Length: 90
Image (cartoon, rainbow, N blue to C red; front, side, top):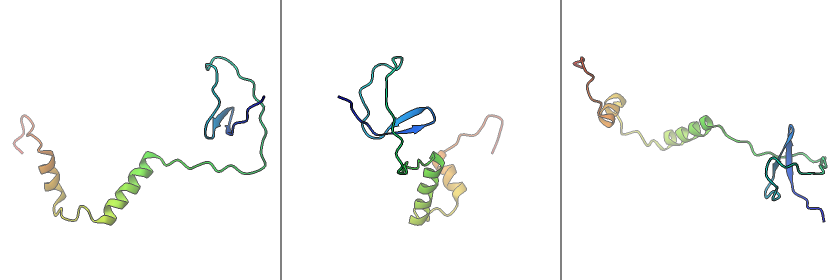
């Protein structure tokens, strides 16, 4: 009996949609039949790390979570508590 699994073909590779078959090791070939469907494929758009970071920063700005910081330079210096560098007085 033949089993059917949903996948998306990208170039020369199949990406399983949902649960894929239990395959043999990668170095063993597997025979498949592929039917191209006329319906469009909705592939979830992946956000880059930068896009996720920008969204998180927008949420922080909207929440005014850092409004109590009057002088960011002083706040950062206090938070980091940097040590003075050798040979420098400041």
